[in-house]
Image 1 (cartoon, helix red, strand yellow):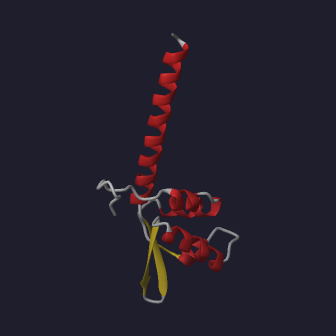
Image 2 (cartoon, one colour; image 1 turned 90 degrees about the vertical axis):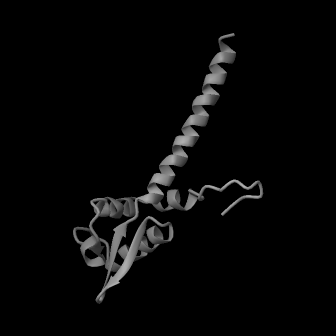
Image 3 (tube, helix red, strand yellow; image 1 turned 45 degrees about the vertical axis):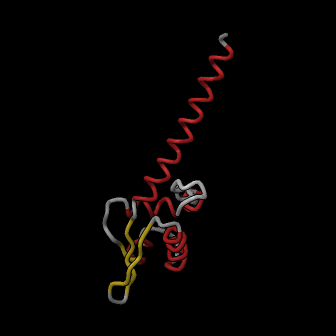
Amino acid sequence: MSSASGHARAPDPAPIFAALGDRTRLSLLMKLSDGQTRSIARLSADTSLTRQAITKHLRVLETAGLVEGRRVGRESRFALRPEPIAEARSYLDGVAAQWDDALSRLRAFVER
C-alpha cells in the first residue's frame, strides 16, 4: 500500500505488539519457534489451558500474522510465521536509531 507521497508504507506494527503482549501467546510462539507445525492438542499439552483457550490465543496470533493455521485431516495445525517478528524488530531498530540521534543532539547541546 502506498501513501499519498508515493512512498511505500511500512505495515502497522501495533497488532503484532498487541498479540505479543500476552504470556500465553509468547509461550505458544516459543513452542512453534523450532519451525515444526503443531496441532492444538499438542500445543495445549503440558498446560492448564483448555484447547478452546489455546485456540482463542492462536486466532489472535493468526490475525496478527504471527502464525499460520491449516487443516490437516480433522485437525488444525499451526506454524510460526517469522516475517512479522522481523518487521517488528525492524520497527524497534528504527525507534532506537531515532532515540540515539535525539540523545546525541541533546549531549552535543549540553556539552556546548
